[in-house]
Length: 157
Image 1 (cartoon, rainbow, N blue to C red):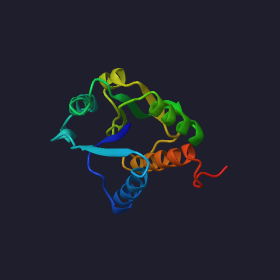
Image 2 (cartoon, rainbow, N blue to C red; image 1 turned 135 degrees about the vertical axis):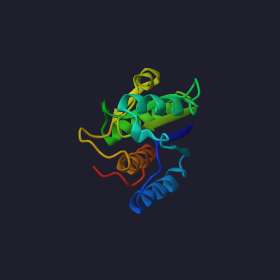
Image 3 (tube, one colour; image 1 turned 45 degrees about the vertical axis):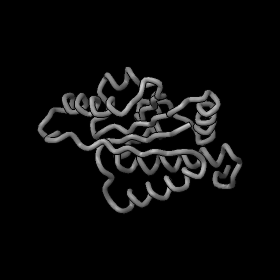
């Protein structure tokens, strides 16, 4: 199974880019991890949030395949414990999902068309995080899930 993480805009700040690089390296020991950055919409600051989300959705759909399993990182999504997330990940592996795609939205979230295309929404916390920071937080949880699946000593009870 290939896991892909897609987000809008470049990662900013060395603490973000270094965290992404570190967890990407760790995760690639377990399975393929692809990270795709969708460039910010040109002159997006001139658009209202609804128009911006629509343009971001159009760019996202160009990167998705019909058989992708899409999970949106969304504050209104289902919350898992780390162990339950590991079970979810393992289930996708066993169900022979070809590509599991996690998507971090832009500053205003997702267009309705993206919600309709997605298979599920996942919330990492009831708190709101910046769309920059959530990249590192999610990758750490993905790494943690892989260590839980393999009974490796990273996750403590």
